[in-house]
Image (tube, rainbow, N blue to C red; front, side):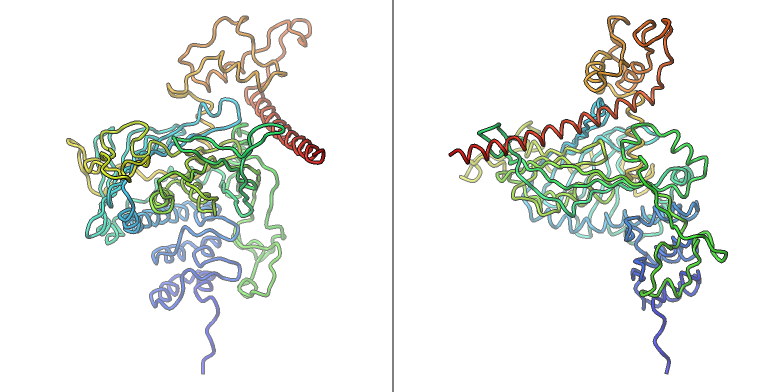
Length: 610
């Protein structure tokens, strides 16, 4: 009688890279392709870590989950990049985008079903990026997502499309989802080029090979990943706590209330919100590492790429080791749950820096707001979060157990100096009327109330405008990647290069702002000595750079023999300015804590006197 088969059969085939036997085992459909081994890895994660490309290809063809994160919080794609294998990265990236697309399409029927049962509405979600660093907020973009919902039809308009070639990409796009008997029709409307890309849900899911072929990344995209650090940024909300904000001073303090978009809202602070940023570089060449470290700007450091400590697979390399198994772990050791590997691990030895910063998030919650977070707003956020990192962070935050009320405004951290402030406004066109939305004339006590519901949405907003060309599922451009590391570089580039017209500011305005943060540096020459401010068309980034690069006046105090000292480099001056900004922020928080402690002492004294 045969004994029981080996434990983790798929994993063991992956370990030996016996990909033909792996194919046969998966075809038998007798094994769980997502089973985790004693070290927490699925067969796909193990194959990627070991660099076994043939096994990876087989597992992906059988739809192994590319979106799963390891116990250490690394995605399969990030582990693929760490191998340094271009073919591995291309393959995993292609299937990741394919699975994202199919998830989005597969989730649409449930989304439309939820929306069908909810009241119709129109709402605007304004995204603003803010920062305590001087001028950063001026350079960072904002966007308004405009949302129409009627029956099982949904339309979302946006103007901030993403970023390519290190510049912000803007345009006018509409994403329209229309429920149909056979599934759903999905349309992406490019208003600038008057083009419409359509996808029929049922057709797309039945033609996976055609959809997969459109997801193949370019060689340039793969190369850019292999020559850039792996960056992971996430919010840790495990220990989050909510408390009401207070207002008033000394003997009179009350719970803070503010009016947001016409609704009275209670203001809460979410404490113990940690922003964790980790950066890996083991896949980079010495030249890439040198460029990453030596060429790193102060903004990149402040945006979470500053190295604080490194960790490695610390055991010495043994003679029988391989590049992906540097400590020569045997399969018996690896698959034995009782065997401790201590600091030994498979995969290329990790070179990692990390940064953890604690933040406060702020919420404005209104118990009067008529929108339902769960029924009307969450389905939209779930849909957008599939391909948008910002919405994913918002979803992770608002799915916490929040205090009662609708979050009419939320401010959450995205990076170490960058917050996102999301505000819901213009519900059903009550603030700024729209021709496509109206509230019926009051015919009952309900309709005559202050609530904007019932709300009627013009069905024409879900139709293709006249004169637009309608194309099939073939996309004329690749799906844009929303990974946080690319966003960080785009922000840094926006700060140092020309801005848009909306970001124009004179050198005088910049000087006033910078002098509040660098009063002791003497970096900025006075306008009286150099004439008028820069032209009004000068961008903030360029004006900042030119202002800081100006040399100190000849003969000024501290300049011996009347000769001007060599001015510090722009990067050094900017680093000092940011450090002073950080210290000022810390001092402001310290003063706030001191004032709170003083208030508590005074309050206790007043209570004891009475």
